[in-house]
Amino acid sequence: MITKNRIENYVFDDQTHKALFKLSSNKIFDSIDFPIASGKEAITFYGHLQDTPLVAKIYKMETSNFKNLGQYIDGDYRFKNASKEKRDLFLVWANKEFKNLTLALKNGVSCPIVIGKEKNIIIMSFIGEGEKAYPKLNEVDFDLDVVYPQIIDNYARLLYGAKLVHADFSAFNILINPNDQKITIIDMGQAVVWSHPKAKEFLKRDIINIVNFLKKKFKKLEITNDFFLEDLKKKKEEIYGRDNKS
Ligand SMILES: Nc1ncnc2c1ncn2[C@@H]1O[C@H](COP(=O)(O)OP(=O)(O)O)[C@@H](O)[C@H]1O
Ligand SMILES: [Mg+2]
Image 1: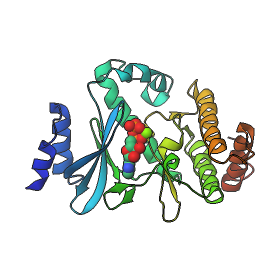
Image 2: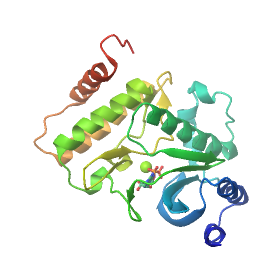
Image 3: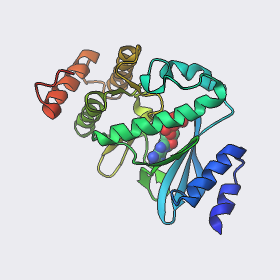
């Protein structure tokens, strides 16, 4: 059977291997085909469940980077009992991204559909065409009038609907379908709830990142961080009504 061989083509540690096997026996995911990206904390793979292309994001167990990630977990009441030990953090992290994506999705954010989670692995829908993931916003030209309203709409739903701050919002974490310019927000492991003590700081940073990117790309664009925040608030009223106090 192709499935097993493919998973076994990669050297995964024992726990990851077992988790992949469980996902495969539960018919959530059955083949790892090739890596799409290798980041600091996770490797993202293209794979399948039968004929359906899927993505497996596998948080690395052997990484020291998680040390710096504690700040995104401390202060998020959902994880107050989570162990601070490094060996457990990747599990908390996978759990966090899974929860954040689920919440975002429920609130109408355009993001990958999360399908399953096992230990350090999240399975989600593949955002791309053929075997190629859609490009990131920084990799292609796009029409600002088509994309900007989507950025506002999606961030407003994340912020005021899901009540989450992305905390790593940038052109690198927005995929764009080159055919219709529809965007998808990805990478939510670090997103925090509003009540997190650094939520405001992270929100400010998110806005600065995206605004700077847009200003650099569209030299004539007159936009400031305050404009962006105003647009988010207007969108909130439009979606959730005037009486929404949040
Ligand atoms: N659901 C997905 N569909 C297609 N490509 C994806 C998907 N999720 C992630 N990717 C690709 O993998 C890369 C890394 O994923 P990301 O979640 O941003 O992890 P990291 O934490 O490593 O930045 C993305 O830049 C994107 O190219
Ligand atoms: Mg990313």
